[in-house]
Length: 117
Image (cartoon, rainbow, N blue to C red; front, side):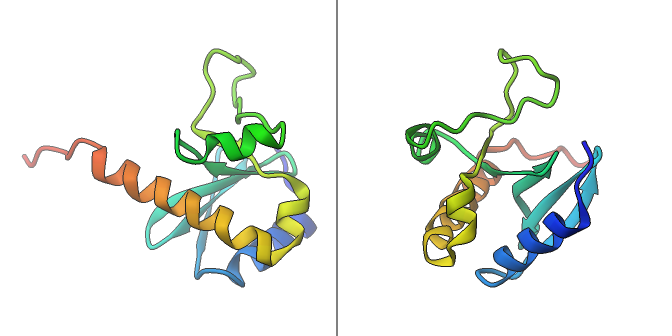
């Protein structure tokens, strides 16, 4: 799952023009965070945004599919590939970013809290 430095820089630059973000290398890819919440990931020269039922139809309407880290279509992650033309246009990109952030925030609210020991 290698990523070229050029693509990494390009994607980081595009996203950081919309929101402040941090990144972390994970499993050979790169994960993007805003305010501590993961909302996007990059693997093999592709960018994926976090999805749920609220924004998945946007990706499906553009014939984009889920992130399949293990190649098994029965075990997709809750991330879908972002269309290249969306990434290239900041005006189009901003609402897609916001929807992914909303999904990440919603997921954080519904995740069970860890018990204190």
